[in-house]
Image (cartoon, rainbow over all chains, first blue to last red; front, side, top):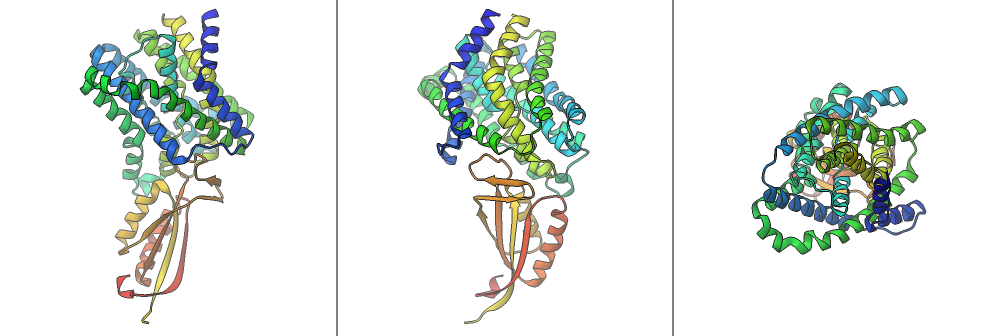
Length: 324
Length: 102
């Protein structure tokens, strides 16, 4: 208990979280502080490249582990399954139509790469070891949720209009995932020798980039929240309760599969996270009738800040208590 | 100056479906078009603003000059498309230079 409180406090007082909160406050009070859009995209690319590369080098160092296949299996089950649960809950507690419920459910089954980046940084700082191959698990967990949501919605417009190719490109060839997995492979192939060339970039510089990126995320999350029109109390409760439920499911599966506490913590963070880049864009193609004012606001402006500030240390402490 | 009567198509769609709509234009026989970015807007789906994080909701304007016959084919395909997707189509009569190119 003291440990988990200590963990939560450690997380709250890191520059990353404090700058996120600064951005959030600035956005909420309508400051003109902003990170230019092109710069924000560049920062995101640096994050994907660094985290993928580091994961690849670590995976090459540790060799193939049976934990990878187990974690991948758990990740796939969660990504397919969480939307079904989220959809059922939304249909009961809210008045959202079927399509918007399905689209929202897809966001919660898929993952947020930035939450993964912040979560793994937290684990590194807290000294909790996890497999570098978890980067590959992130990529596996992006897409199945979209398929589940399409089934829940009873098909989408993309098939009718011959836009399946565009949907596939948006999902499978999504720039973040291509760079993340590409950098993971580069890291695996170049190994320690590659790391010695890249260590300043993916090490010390990475922290600064992450902090600046989270400052921008704080700004956009607060602006999104203050502009929200379609939020109701049940929906906000869903956006906080759903990640907790997903992390509990994930920890249960990890326990059953005998995963290490570090890998279980990463999986719980991924299960709890909700997509706000790849899935919203995919949903504009797949389910154009669904309301982005609901799904994007919930995942970006409620669930992301909740996970970043409270969720990550909570899931990590729970994984340590349950599997440690 | 020799001017020819043509139709001007202005089509606004969301960025993720742009390629699909460009494919429709090519299939309908449109010989050329230009795509422009947009900064902000408002409509049935609420407002959006570039840089305010609205993945998938950014709009693109497609500008094309075509013959009346090609315009008819494009509109037929788009009528079906806009039954499912948000967007705007406007057609106007214009006079263009070098009409043989359109």
